[in-house]
Image 1: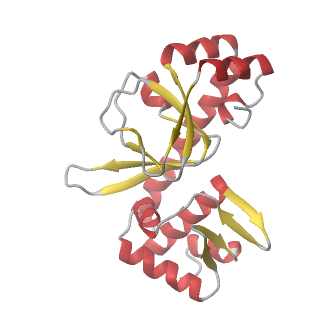
Image 2 (image 1 turned 90 degrees about the horizontal axis):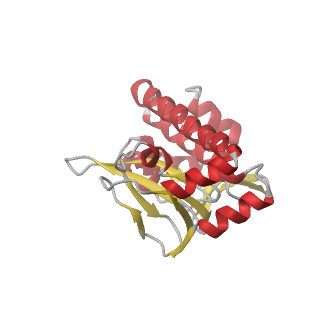
Length: 224
């Protein structure tokens, strides 16, 4: 529980109360945590593993709205608005998920306003990221959007080691395509070209970025 962003800066007593009231679930890869269109009844947080939020249109087309990495919360805004989930939450890998009912979370917030501050920051960050992605879809080429996707994930769930930055969320090429708003063919072609020139590599389901400055230049449209 200490690693959860929503509990950052909270007292040990608050963390203990959050742990005592949480429902803890151990889930296998590809398990569905909640379904698109279902009522948002619980706030969730990733204790271990990672989660993708996938939205499906009426025509069957899919996009990945976002990923939730270790420590991050999801499903919060919909729950507080008594709304329905805008996408499916799917375990990317074996996960441990903590969740609270609305009443339980409000009790925790009343005891520790710091939790509310942390959650507001998290929701605000997601909103900014959503605005950035809309702008990228409207104004940028596919290669730029793919580069932005990798940079965003490297910032969210990256780990520096041996001269590269590893994205710790296991990524399929389909994940990159659906996050960047492009086709699997286009994403695969771009990633293969970047692997060939040594910009990145894949190892044990992790994507390793060897040249962050080059990826930034591609994202900014300075290189193809």
